[in-house]
Length: 297
View 1: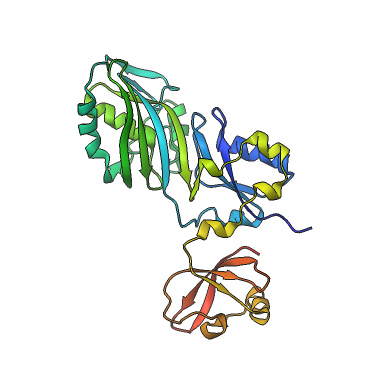
View 2: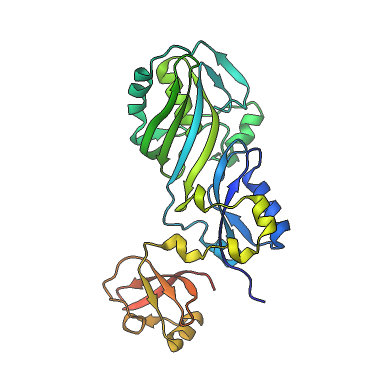
């Protein structure tokens, strides 16, 4: 029996780690080869793309690594985790700050910015995860990292309560709770994230997602999306039967055989004669052949 291969956009429930989702799905699907793209904190809900079978080979090469979130925040508090689940470090009165002031401070967080990763994160410093150091009560210096915030808007704000919601579209590696923490610092009152939902990841949205309960009741084929959907913008070439066999045996194909121009300078999808997505390849212009980048067969 052929092992299933594809992507399941799962709705991650609150209180679950991304690993919890994978562990549960191994039991539901009776499969070991599962992976996910883009870890979500236990507090967060939303889109978690789960890769099934040989599709796990694509987890680290997805073309669309940008993500979008809806995040809630509370002014007047800072915590060691930068969200309300952590230990409170300071409290002040965050009520009464005008919406216009918050909107003005948000300007500094749009576009290409430098962000210092939080201590409670999986970033490694000196070979150790920051969250492991944080749990030992240690705080170390972290190098700022360049991120891009494509869109940042204040979608809701209660001036009297000092609470609000943000919509954020950003590049891979962005910490939403750090944006909120830094916003609080800019406002002079502190802030902590009180809720997070990822609404887009790897090109999938909440509308594409299935819940854990639904997965337990439905056939896998119904939930499984073709891996090639994640490479929608790529050029696709289809090989004939002879070239499909050669490609799958690791034989280099001339560009003319593969039906692609020697000057093509981007990665492309290779489709077999039976319609199966074989993998990603590129042109080696100096040799006039195509070379596999990552195969999924």
